[in-house]
Length: 282
Image (tube, rainbow, N blue to C red; front, side):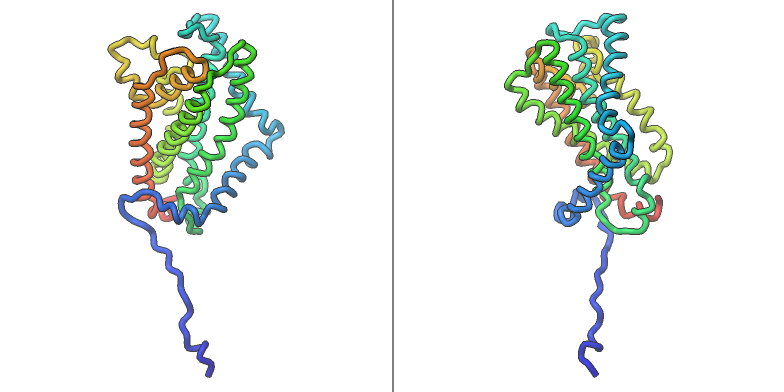
């Protein structure tokens, strides 16, 4: 009898990770091809299969800019600080907010939206919200190009410090969107009402963020609480970095960094704690 016949077959056992722990970077690296495939699939599904394609990235912020400029610039007559043209002032807020809002809500729905795959195949579940957030960066890059065009039409040139400030704040808002997406995606699996409330929550959050107004318009006694919104530091920092009206809001940006770190780390911990239940619940 062949000796090979008596040898037991090798088995690979995949056990769910438990406990409060952060991301397993080595496992994420092993599934890197899947991550980039999902990023490509998200982009293809969003734009390639639509008649206007990437045109939607241009249409949405431009139309919103026109409405905000008409209502808040012409009717309400809000005056941005530093003499910044209102269209540029608003568009900087819109660019950052639309990226954050779109990435956060899409990432929040990513696990529930892929329930058929999650319940059958093993892979790091973190890949789903992460791929959504990364794919939204393409929208952000296109919007930033539009912003530069709008600034040029208004005779504005970004100062040299924008080369440092803009990438720093893009990373910050990306981390914030991912952190919120991790929280929402894990919660939405266990509590279905979370999925229905995300759009409403984003709408309220938008009005609490200085998109069409400046933090200076907030009464002094409320500014400390207002600054707890991490988008305040991000939007205000982008404006200061791009149109160079001093001073740069270091205190607000530092608050945003601290709050974003808490949201991202706690979101990753909660997501890892909850993901072993995803296949049973979705």
